[in-house]
Length: 357
Image 1 (cartoon, rainbow, N blue to C red):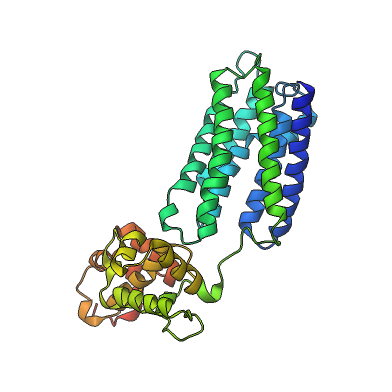
Image 2: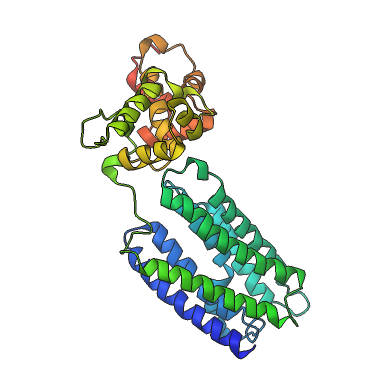
């Protein structure tokens, strides 16, 4: 390992540890900060564990570092998911992938000679990077938080492409032995990314990067768009007041939310305004962070009213969900239970007399 690579890796490790401490400090209040802090800590471990003098070193003092390093691609997948999905919770597949990565990594170092290989670890790691990249790209059109929309492309894409490029190169070069330029590129690239992220993070107030939506505005119970112009939530600009009125009319009177493929671009076209203005209105004035969740508030209101209506007792629950704009019974059941704590059938049983049912 060259002096330049050693200095680059050391600098990147130092910056990673500093960023991890800041994120874990904020993680006392926000889960996403905890995930990001653990991922950044794992990034420091990766720089140590995969340095050429230690890659195949079987010393036991490296085991705790490798525990963090080998599972870090799965943490990257978790971080990307949590950052772009306000309702994200860690699932068992992500935990299973983390365990698999750690197990395969330890086998590659401490397993029997002749049977050890980093290829399964690298292949599974590349899969995690691709999944993380997809989470950054899929759903960007529905994202109403403009800063997060930019962050999707700037941070996740850059880290995913860099990490994916390194892993792919290692796979193609069969471990990278005999290619010192690969280790140098990894060290310098990590230092550059860590420095950029550290500067951006230190320029923010604590918690600003992962600020949670305001419960008063973005609560799941009712669509905030039903606020009338002139309340505290309504904008003062007459143009914005007019846009808010037009939006309410399109959704409450014309029931545009019933169209399962309705996009924010299509809705902006109907209202005759640029898409960015509609995004800003729904996010900053009405407190919603995701367009689909915003529409689902109206859909769930209609479905709940239909399920509690004796005149609609003969109508199948699936029909009610699809008529309200949901694309499938699965998405309807999941959203309805998240809102009410009950399945649609249990909600109907609770709100309709037995004779009507």
